[in-house]
Image (cartoon, rainbow, N blue to C red):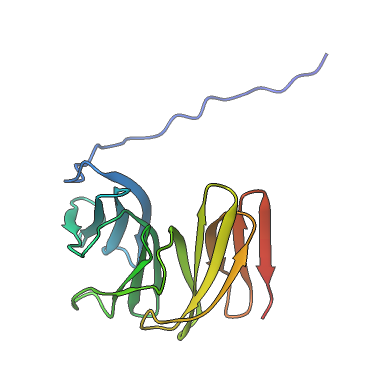
Length: 179
């Protein structure tokens, strides 16, 4: 008789760190060894962005005060800019780590899930809600929408391996671009 041995994976030392928020935390991203961001909030009521400058030992929460706050789902870093995409069609951008956050409202309300950039002036946001509809929205580096395509299924995440190759996953689907 033959069988395999299953080893229990146990994490090493761990530490609980206070986030300073009671909202959901959805995405984490570090742009270097010390600076990182966490996107989250409360879906229909508040957008939270946590920032660390000490490698994640402490986090400072920020609540974006816009006309209709909703949770942040998407985060990406491209060159010196940081972008966040909110559930209500808002696109937040930070030109560099010492700048103030700016935001644009997309021409329509949309449940933005993820954001990624292929090149300096070509970013993409994916949107999806309820498994039955999704969008790919192309934006420039300032967050202005230039194109959009719709689908009959929800889209959840976007990632670029390089300036030509990108992937989007959604409800039962994976999309790939080579250009």
